[in-house]
Length: 238
Image 1 (cartoon, helix red, strand yellow):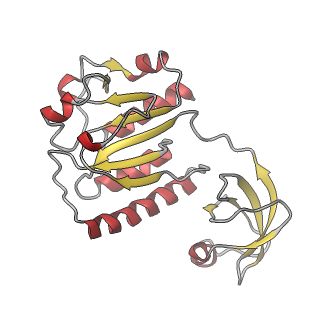
Image 2 (spheres, one colour):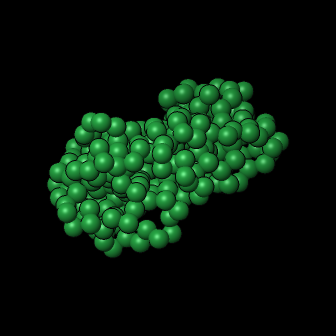
């Protein structure tokens, strides 16, 4: 059943008009007809089954709330530099499907991709659209936020209950993610990954006080490492 995130609060048995951004998809992609059912998630993060009442103006009646429990019991913020080509698209899409809560895109010392403020704004819109579509496809009740940040040195990680740092030069000496989570009782987790060229020594030194984690016995590509970590975390909690 198709899902849409809407920017309004709804109530059961009431009728509403769909957000304009979804009308094209409902009319021309789904070719919806009166009485067709789909789901919406309102701006309070509550999912509902709704029924189309007008296929021209795209109005719908809210039938019932759904007790979806699809979100992870922890909030995961993924810190990643921008990656080349379509790699970042893949990371945003698949990480959303795997349950990430937020993305922070930072400027790494060895980043290949450099963007000015205008290009950052365009990329942000693109990635937010990818995240929204991935959240709808995977039937989540939350769309991850996405922000651009400065260097790792400028970011304050003190608000997180757990900080995981995946350093490829010390991969085999790090603790496994599952072992770290066995000793963890908090809610918020920061997971930090490097660019294609890896972390610089100065960046690695920033995280000596945190848990360096091993991502298996192999060195993973920059776009693969976050997906591995999120899969392990998801497996641990689900």
